[in-house]
Image 1: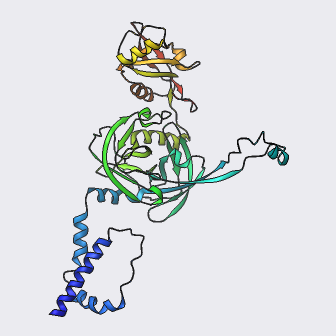
Image 2: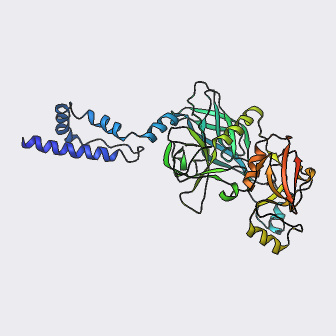
Image 3: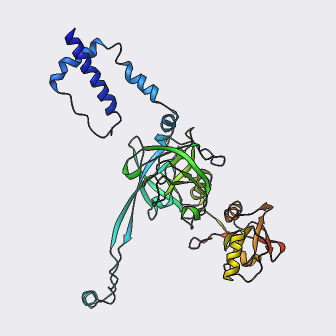
Length: 401
């Protein structure tokens, strides 16, 4: 009995170590047990076989939750993207004026190039190999390496990129691939669960969870004013390498693409709404490029405080007769806004019978139409309300709005 009690104590300790070890890194190879312990442990495993084999299964069942279910459902369709591009090295600032350099390099010397490599994430949206990711993940690459969770590797063709929304489309030649289920971001509420899957810092298939912190964050608030996206904000941990991976709801549906983090703050991650990503990706797969309607104005949300500051600076010579709306600060020459009659000092109060109070509202209304469609823009000009017709052209990528 004494021998049996001692052996049971050893077994119990062994189980505790085994369970605790399960929470460690899976990459470490577990060392083999010392040969001397085999005669003690093995007979007890045989004698207790009616109890011990059930422990791992019971523990696994108890530890499952909706996050584990969502990851099991979506994980196989989340992929790793490895890209590379040639980048020109910068020459010394005084190269042109330095006699030493000019003595040995009298002619114009081509800039040396280096290979820049990056890793990101993506997800499969069709079983024949359509993949969505971020444009900055594949920037400068025509071909990328795509690795599935099961270890299969494919050469991926970058079908198209859209720097305005940071969405890219990649195609691999394969069939019967696992796919994600697309959800909706339009009715998200702060406080809902959010799950992120990706390959941060080279650690494949990493899962993090948190909540939806906010919705409708403008590109200006996020710090990327050249984008035309209203972002989802989440506190689920997102790190370099997560870019392009899916943000999920509690049902395992994709509600966004993880795309940005704030380097100067913790717990702030941002995702592109899946509706935007899907709309742009469909254009990229069909045409290789996406269109964005463009007005050609610089604008600011109007408030009594903004109105007072503008009056003090005398930046605009016309009278601003209202306190709310979107003030046009500048109209770019040769743009649809100029052709439609919009002027600096006009206050946009409505578009297509929709009341406008913010610049993001203007952006939303413009994005809903096609290039060349009619936009009925209602403005207040020195107290008089007018409705002008503007026909947007395609967004020039080298400009901001």
